Amino acid sequence: MAFTIFSRLTSLNLQIKGPQTAFRALCSGCSLSVEHDRQNRRFTVTPGSGAGGHAECAVLHYTFIGEKEVDLVSTYVPDTFRGQGVAALLSQAAMDFLVEEHLKAHISCWYIKKYIKDHPMKTYKELVIP
Image 1 (cartoon, rainbow, N blue to C red):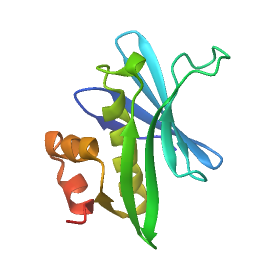
Image 2: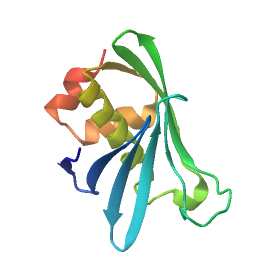
Image 3: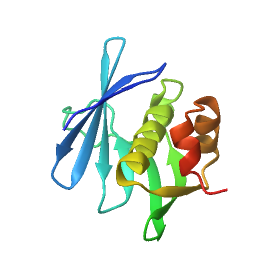
Image 4: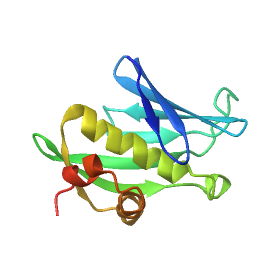
């Protein structure tokens, strides 16, 4: 199952891999992968995938607060990733997850609030619980 989302930062492809979903981002010579770990309710980006090391990863945490409602709780991006659009990539993956699963969201994370404000897609705004 694949689809394309256009944004000023990246072009994403969705690929289903069992219980986890991977978003691949191609950006000026680099390749970042956002993994959706449904069991642990988080999205992650790990630097140097395939390097075999235990690198610190960027993460967006969420929790279910109802049957069809989630709270996008927090994002964390390590210093090595900052300023490269990684938090935006995580936020986009989370918002696309909401769209695909027909979920509504309470946004606790200040960065995701900023992301939605900076990317005024009607679809995203309709998913936010005020």
